[in-house]
Amino acid sequence: MKTQLFVILFLTCILSLTASGQSDDEDFSAGLGAGLDYGGIGINLSFFPMEHVGFFGSVGYAFAGMGTSGGIQFRTNFDKSTSSYRFYFTGMYGYQSAILIWDAREHNRLFYGLSIGAGMNIMFFKNSRSFLSFGLVVPFRNPDYQNYVDNLFSKYGIETITKPSVVNTSIGYHFIF
Image (cartoon, rainbow, N blue to C red):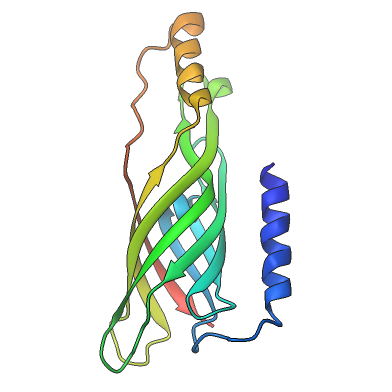
């Protein structure tokens, strides 16, 4: 499922290269950061074939393995002459939770699912070719996560597992190409 999602995302981006209605000078960006939309601690690549609609994919280190995510982003207008920020809304499928057990690494596992979020991109200088991105992401966790935790408690006696946050934060720094 994960591989199919990224193949579809990649093909959509390639096909969109010929789309009309290109955005301003911010069609493609690459960012380093931390959060679900960075696959943990990783890189986020964004492509906007239209001014307000874009796609992203990410890969990162999620402590229990390699986290990936991909999705769509809707952003508001951005006029560099009057403002230095832009709001966005996002929907994605990808890494949401990690079970990391230092003494029993064979039980480490990543969980994937749908998430939605909103955030803000901030440019610090007029005509800047980079921006800082802040976001809040709400994952819709699959019941598999809780079933796995319950299984660790009952079958293996593992008792201390920190519950994942209901709302996750995201921060990254992007470079525009």
